[in-house]
Image 1 (cartoon, rainbow, N blue to C red):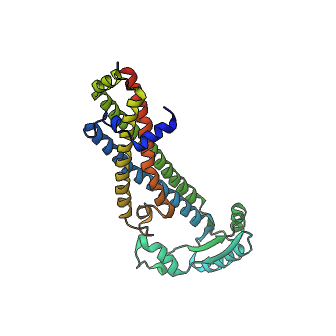
Image 2: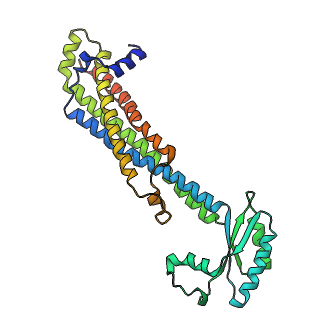
Image 3: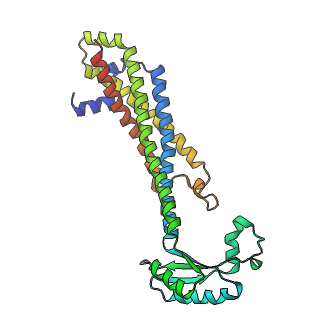
Length: 300
């Protein structure tokens, strides 16, 4: 049978061939449940992967072109060293702007850990200077040498040690999401293969009779392939809808919630859900086809 005829039979169906495969029973329920459950899990794995990608991008953008200068000096020297550090930063190529944070801004940074009533004026808290880089960036090693010579109490943090681990963690989360999707696809294929083998074995006598009256193995296999492909498509569609609804009901992205409230789809990400039922049907098609050919060759 040509590929075009197989596709036509898969879409349009064959009333006589469809009678070979029982429309209900254990294998039908197993296929629907397996496809639905795996599609549901795929929605969450895809959401994890896409959210991790957005997280890595956001962390990289927020930390890539900013640095912090910390001045730990005695109270009577802090103002002078801050002024000296600002002068060095203003004359450094690659730095767009630099400003010393006010006491209120520093108190706001410490509030999540120490509370809003922290007596910042009575504590030896270092002076922080916010540095915004240009697109070209600056020479961190050279700036550290200048600061060491002119502002001994200054410590430069270019956020490299923070940015790289965070980006690496987010990238690994994204990879984990895609690996999970591949494993889910493999598990779906295995479950559908088991269900197809069980259905073929249960109908071995019917298959033997069909062979006696001249039915070809391709004709018999196409009936099983069509049934299981449509069942997988139906189950995956239901699982995808339920998964999308569950994701939709999650809290919206908030700064306070960070990554946990950003687990979802944005924009074109919702369109990617359309692919899940189709991919489940493709997996079911090839898994059932391979199982049918193998089992039919073993039946005598």
